[in-house]
Length: 362
Image (cartoon, rainbow, N blue to C red; front, side, top):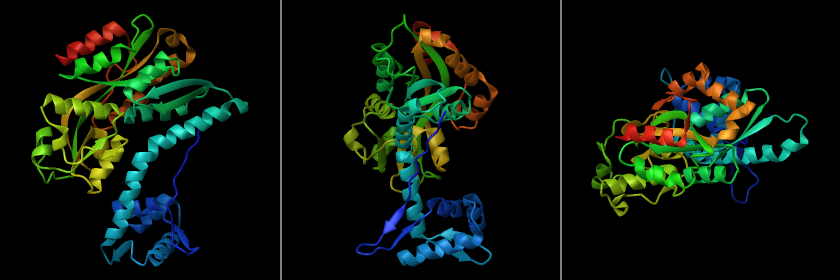
């Protein structure tokens, strides 16, 4: 199966001048993380001299240094270099899923013109780290193609009902909010046609800078301490869950400083906090750890897939279930902070699953 990657390029231009420069933010980020230009050169598969010359070229273009080197203390980014790197981190976290969707659309359009035509599984799912891991493993499977589109919970189930996808990825919170989430899904679930596949659980909570300077421990602290918040977009399941949590705790969104400031992925809000543009956000633990943030757990979610009963009988889906149950996928999930693969790949009737999840929430 053809796999397409769309990459962004950071090209800076000067007004009324043909002069421009492409800044490799990955090189700067590696210097930020390791303090070594040699490490950045190795990571970019470039010579030390070439990377050193690039840094000098960038400095000359902007008129201010991006990197400073001290004898015996390695290299570090200047405040300007840090600003560029974190802008890149936010951009990648924000656009990553969108670019994946666009690449998948192109792959689907050109597939009929290619000689190799593998069996394609259409997946519409809420964005998640475990879903990305599953897709990585499926991409290596011969004879199976994956058409993965990131959409919201409700859109995923609507796609399945309209036969626009084969697998629908949905996340449901445990605890007091369980009933609301299930009720929102019921109108799309047909107990006669649909089956639910256990996938993973993930921890949801507050993300704050390491050290938690404001000592934020709860939703109430966000409002009471006037912490700068960055929210998820209105169509996301995580935004719906956060709004439900506010209502559960009797907190008016108007008292959340930055509730209307939005980003579109878990990683994007984490990068926003890590770059110092916000004090706190809400999302999965894996995103917090990815950006070196502290995490305050609030609840656990079950992430599941829903499909038609007839689709379970296909060869492609049997291979997907085998992969879900395999050691390689379980090891990959175990490496994701806050994620757990338990009974992954087990198929339930809609009633049996809802009864099970109901018992877990008690």
